[in-house]
Length: 265
Ligand SMILES: NC(=O)c1ccc[n+]([C@@H]2O[C@H](COP(=O)([O-])OP(=O)(O)OC[C@H]3O[C@@H](n4cnc5c(N)ncnc54)[C@H](O)[C@@H]3O)[C@@H](O)[C@H]2O)c1
Image (tube, rainbow, N blue to C red):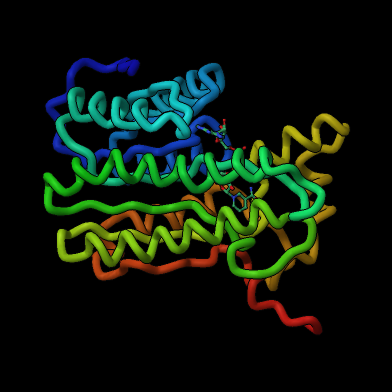
């Protein structure tokens, strides 16, 4: 784990954010630093992670980084060991890293199913399993899982992704029940369509700009537009922090009303 700062004497809370190099994870890092957290940023993409960490340090954040693929369970344990060794505590896990593999049950291969479940479900659970002993040692803490609106509504052509994200909601409720009396809160956000690097990179390859994506997605949900990453990060920060001290086991759709839009809306 890389630490640009000297060993900290700070008592500021510590958040571990996975998939922090880009998109919603990076927005969470900015948001939580703004709320006074120290942030441990992990991602499987070392170059982008280093760039994000540099920007956040320049903005005044106290940052640790390590390259971590969340499907590597022992490496998840190592990450928590490194965080505790550097900062002595862990208060919050934002389990955000995830992948999208399109396709239906019949036009995808079992290897695709295994891959998406390994990242979006198992990898997410590995991170929680690694974080829990640290949270339990402190008798308090929070976990926020990043699921998707696709866990709440049926869509076409996204079966693998939808089932992987729905499973995360089962994990949320189960862990909330298991660890509630130990002071650990566990919640999930279900973002709707959000203008992240995932979309920007894919569309840039086709010569489409961010402004054009916003135009193309006009009419989405009840607000008639897609989300910007900080709007998702704001909901994650609420669930992670003390304002949500009596909120656990919950699933918060942050989808501009997409999941409640009727056919005639
Ligand atoms: N963007 C959307 O419209 C949207 C909507 C609903 C849910 N989500 C969910 O939000 C989360 C973040 O998505 P995003 O749009 O910001 O994506 P993104 O691609 O912009 O960023 C995701 C980051 O996660 C990292 N990552 C992917 N697999 C990893 C792994 N196995 N180990 C470690 N890091 C890994 C990537 O390197 C990347 O930096 C994902 O779980 C995604 O499913 C996104």
